[in-house]
Amino acid sequence: MYRIDDPSASATLPTPEAALTEGYWTEGNPGSGIPATLERASWFNMVQEELRAIVVAAGLTPSKTTYNQVLSAIKRIGQNTVVLPDTGTANVYTAVNAVPLVSGTWVDGVVQAVKIAHTNTGASTYAPDGLTAIPIYGLGLQPLQGGELLLNGTAILMHATIAGVNSGNPICVLMECAGGAQQVPPATASQHAVQLQQIGHGQCRLSVTSTTVLTLKPYNGNNVIVNGVPLQLPSAGVTYTLSGLAASTLYYVYLSGNTASPVLSVSTTSHVTGSNGVEVKSGDATQTLVGMVRTNASTQFVDSVTQRFCFNWFNRRNLSCQFALATTLSFTNTTSALLSATFIVEFLTWGDESVLVIFDGTCQNNTTGNAVQLVSGADGASNIGSPQQFNAAASGYGGNFSTSYNNPFVEGYHFTSLFGNVNGGTGSLSLGSQTKATVRG
View 1 (tube, helix red, strand yellow):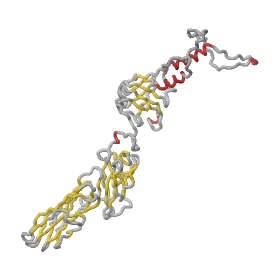
View 2 (tube, helix red, strand yellow):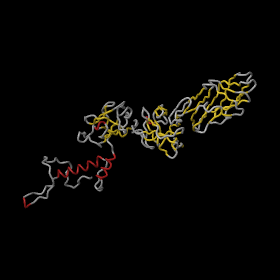
View 3 (tube, helix red, strand yellow):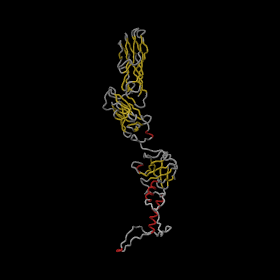
View 4 (tube, helix red, strand yellow):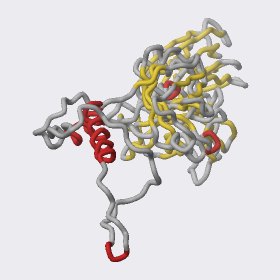
């Protein structure tokens, strides 16, 4: 935008005539006595200087032979960001614009770039040009907590009014600040950034809270990855109420849904490892495995020392099983056989865990010189543990026995079994003899 360079042009800007009422150009109407609008030098100088100011502000050198300098200048200026110095204090930020904002121009969508002079330590506000301070919120639409506005970082703040945020009153959204912590909303999809409180997996524990209710509660945190996204369990946990299940049946327990609506369910369908390493329901990766249960013969949930029927996939711990004879158990069979269908403990186990089983107590044979032979087993099968033999030195003479094993099992339901026999006479296990197991779940 080159100034007029005609030989008749003034070397200095003439003083314009006094300002009159603003109006518009007219061609005039001689028949009506309306004169045409005069082309005054003051108006042309004003237009020339306004356009030239844009070119110069963009750092361009005015040229007589370039005809898009104003356009180029506008593009250049649009690339520049005016960074305002922070004139406030920590948590109370202010700045002054060259052309002050007023209530009518400080509106939604207006952006301010402020070079921070004080790192924030908590919730913060911003007030440009002496206007009323409004709170600064992060991208998660929550008040700042500290460290988001870093000393010498440039904060990009946008005026916004969002229903349900700050009671519908205006806020400044912190779009970014170099070096400062970035607030993000809770992740709801697998590629989303997560909040610190969302980090973790398997922070839960399943339990039987009644004969008809299972409860999954937070444990060492409250996150479980479900469908690739952290689901945060409520402090009271998530429950499943028994309905439509069969007696004496194994069920896997799955968690689905999201933080707002978590769902606990059971299924006889087993589990597989998903592509992200999370154990999920076979055929449905939206359901994360959290446990395994078995109903008893009365179609109830139970978890006791004789029936360990509630197992956790996460946060496993040693669980003890124990049953002691309340009366003497006698037998006369001379070939190895299951001594009792009730001298057992029942339990579940995961396929990657071993189970320690012990039978111990006192045995005897009522005939001198005859023997008692015992061997521990499981699920009605013998010869799993080491065999034990006791020879009666005298009629009714008793001795201690212990037979055990520590073996992995196929995942699911199992029970301990004790096999035995005599070579004559009557053998017996004394009151208080025990079957015990240690499982992990």
